[in-house]
Image 1 (cartoon, helix red, strand yellow):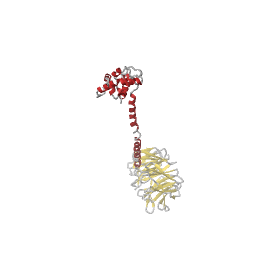
Image 2 (cartoon, rainbow, N blue to C red; image 1 turned 90 degrees about the vertical axis):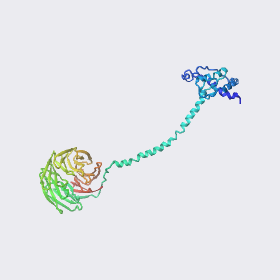
Image 3 (tube, rainbow, N blue to C red; image 1 turned 120 degrees about the horizontal axis):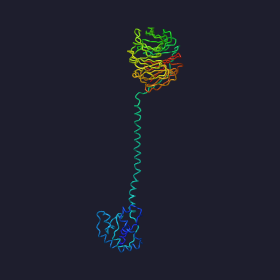
Length: 471
């Protein structure tokens, strides 16, 4: 191969660097990056023939210079490149080298190719950078989707466990037997109670009589006569051997269970007005009575003597109740309050205020943690008797609420109203769970059986209704 053809590329590269067109004057980085170019004059353009003639004359000199130049160990600074006549031909990176002054002087009329050597260098760099960057980008997409799916499932899985533990006290499910037993009393039924053995129902009537019905056979009834006015309240003793009754005749009578019949016992007289409520202490030794004379009286059951009077209400006392442990007495009044008293000393403990109407009835839960009060304002309020805190208000009746009673286990509260209904309430969430309809007049009183499976309601429609409940 001709030496002229071999040296042609090298000469063209060297001359291209030395004779590249000058950059614009406003390109302010030329001097800072290529200071040697600013002083190089721009030579005139030559034809290809002239360039070939130049190569024919300069080939022996260039070959000799290339053979004499040692291989570079490291890239010299720019100043050494300018001083070396052979450096331009030996270095493979022409864009960082200056042209050889010797070659330029030996061929003053040499042609110059206006080609920038930076262009071929930049092309592979851009290509090499783009290809590896673009290819792996789509690969992580399926991995992200795969890891997101189990993460979502894991967050949903614990939800049923949390819900199950959020309500430790389940809401009771009460089923009311639609086959309700109706007992005809023949008179307004103003008050009712169920004996501790669950077999006897005592009903105070508007004609001053008391009727004892058997739950097992309601056709068997015993009528007690002794009061002269309607019987506003009745209560069995805890052992079922006594029955107390309070009347509009201002008296209290004790009735004795003689196994085969009830016989009239002692008459307790001292109130000056209607006796609206009576209640036995848990041990049966004390009887409490509430009267419209604003006084609560405590009686010794054995001898019929008054133990003490509890005074504090500013209006009629309508109902009275003992706490399950017998230490506290609660009284309900037309002054819109409930008052708590010490059963042993008779000291006033506290007044529970919140009702905006007459408080007609009260009841303690079986564990004594709640006290319920029924009022003419249409509400039932639940209190903590230990500190008098109001813990809930039950709304559901459409008229005056006359009476309340807790189931023996304390999970259900029953209420009777002038709206002719009785309502069952859950104490776990204080929500209404059943409405008992059927009476055609005011439901004045109600009572649970000892096992909680029966609720008896008394009405001015002259009937008792016996509701069978299952939980």
